[in-house]
Image (tube, rainbow, N blue to C red; front, side):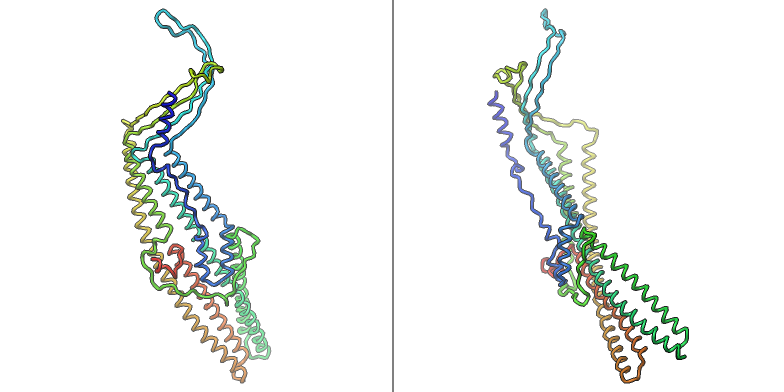
Length: 457
């Protein structure tokens, strides 16, 4: 009997099934999610160094990685359901029986005895219809969804971080220009006061210039507030409240080149939400097949071998050995329509997933097109403001030349300088907007190198 059990156990373990050839989970290259090759195109060493710190320290990125690891364990748990199960569950109890059993004229008297029961149990659900395999495939697609969610987190966080970083550079430059404006306005107030004291200017002119000075100082305070808020925001991304935010200067930042003016509509295939919806359709497709196969019978091969004795000293005797083996078929004859309702529900979920998939494609194309329009507009605005700055710089230079030959006053020079600084602020803002628009386009395209996008497709 014992030999028969072992033969059955060997058959269970040797049953041909693809699940026994388990593959190691694919290792995720999370550094690729950062996409440093793209950010290095901004030609800013401080930016890339800060992104590496973000990769190492950010708590949201760590939690996203843990979420993937959690789902990897869920896949392993489901995979375990495809394998034979082997367990040991022993019992030790004292049996107290009354004289309630009688066989003809013979009556069993009252008795008590110990029972030592040590069975080794093996069971395996024969996956004839492939239901367990489909369940594992469904869970694996859920894992792919979580992986894309992690990638989306990387794209979002890096994009937000770089946006705040560039805005901080803009705030630094604005503050620098604002201090120069205040210094210039103080000179204007001083010159106007001198004119007022000798009767060449009215009190209203002096008050207007003094009012302008206070307005410029208020604006400087707003720039200081913006700078400090952005520094705190970047420190939060880096998970260090006292971190020094090393950054580039405005004069050293460069615009990106090589971004195509148009993109193929297939760029949405790089987006995490597209890949998530694609995996979700596959997942629900597996669930529909599983729901169909729930109507079919199940077959479980089981076997049990062990020791069963009433006395401890006879526990290991041959007479105490026991075993059982067999096949357990089962099928639900009536479930009140539960299985049919489950199948219909999964079909509805599949249709819903298809609708979401098509909507995601349309949304992705819309976002890419909108981002491309913003990028082109930002480029044009920067071009126009650069031309305007050149003209204003020329006006300021001419006014300085006039002052040297006595055909213009110092006040005229200061006014021209103020006008130049105002246009300079517009030029700074538009240049940063061009870089910010490339980040928006990068995010909309799914976090890929925009300069290589058309080549990859």
